[in-house]
Amino acid sequence: MTKDGARMFWENPGQTDAPASLLVVDDDPLFVHALSQFLHGEGYQVDTAADGAQARALLAKTRYHLALTGLSRSNGLMLLGMIHQRYPDVAVLVITGYGMVARAVAAVRMGALAYLIKPLIDDEIRVTIKQALEAQKPQSGSYRLRRRLAAVRPGYPMRRPPVRKCHVPAQGDGIP
Image (cartoon, rainbow, N blue to C red; front, side, top):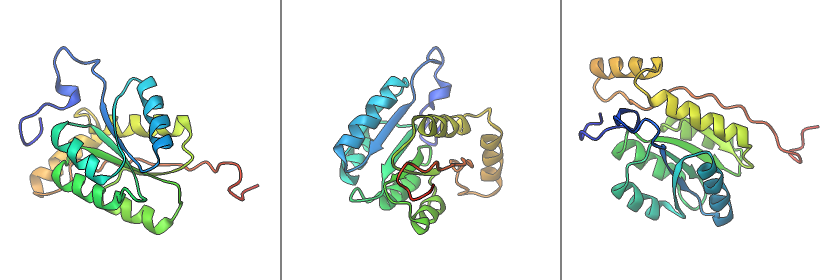
């Protein structure tokens, strides 16, 4: 259960097959549509937002398990910080079209589970989301460890499981 007594997706008796709820935030409507269609096809319940303001409104009224946010005009780093502070049970993946190392480091330091670079590869996003959701489940070792650390160190972030990302360069990245 969360601090406010709400149940997490793995705690719903009789609803073990309930899909995880995802929020996709990006200022590119074609990308948002394509990603949301892909995620629907994977069995997730998906809501979309074009910017941080829409995302904040959706977060205020809907409980999400995972947010995928872009870094451009949607102001992803500010949104990431707000989610981490107000909704600590929501895992965040950051998606961008620019592979800037400094932004990746900043995003991970702020609590992002992974930093994904467009164009996304189906298997890459599928595996990364699955790892992020699995790491949130109470039976995972990382969840139990974070729970014990939070008991000893109040304020310890409960939703920062280590998710590793491997970038496979797309054609035209200048790599032979």
